[in-house]
Image (cartoon, rainbow, N blue to C red):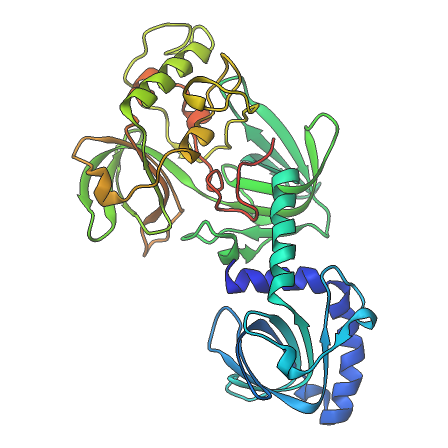
Length: 412
């Protein structure tokens, strides 16, 4: 877990206790300092402890040197506690590197030093335990899909979750208490996401929500939402710079040339030829009659249309061909196939000019290229067999454990 995300977890842990702290601590701090304007607060991760001094990392910006005053109130808050009355008094020597703290006091003008009159601590182990609970909750109560429409006035988002078995829709209901984050244009990581609003969500965005669903799974009351733009390209390779970590491709739909950066965080995989052929056969067999490549008909070689990344294909957990995890004789589950393939590198793929790839990437900015979230090679048989099955084949930024808190497949 990143330092910044630990700080987000801390905010959830403290909850109402921070609100009461603002009321309790304000009066005490005013008395000690003599002026409300001098009161400041910081939340961060302890990097080091030396005597009564804490080195605090806030995730962004320089570290802060926190001097704990002899009269400072110091408390340890247990996971889930909402009231400081149940906190445990501690000493500076009880604080360890990796603990998350919230300090109140006075800050120097340069922001690099701080005099603490109050310190609230949540241990590293407690943060890890709560983080695991959040991850499990996302896996249990999380849904993901592509935004079809947004009704900001009503607070609703309509999601499409297409598959070879037919499009599935879901309505995401929000309230003023729903927390909305938007992924950064250059990162699929939740810790890089920024606070956002329903008004910023657009059709075509990928969205994942956590909350309680209704009985038939067609609606969800969202407590938390992550949304962003993640384009996907079915393309052919034009050039590769393995040492520089870039690949230049031609998008088969738009015919545009696109440069994509491949980093150590990118999921790079190659589908073995036999596996791709078996997957293609199942795609053809599961497609409705009359569709190109469906009903046993011979398919054209036209690639699937490009667009925003779609949701993972829902699988029932049964054993299909290739151990794909899809329903017997039903649509194969590409997400589960990919999760079982070994990771590779751009150099190991040995891509040649003209090779077909499928790339899920970040949105990018005018000054930065797309960054690959997932890059798949060996996909020629799939693209040839199912040119109209692009929606069902599309990837999501979280299908391999990234892109939204909790990782894993979006439960549908």
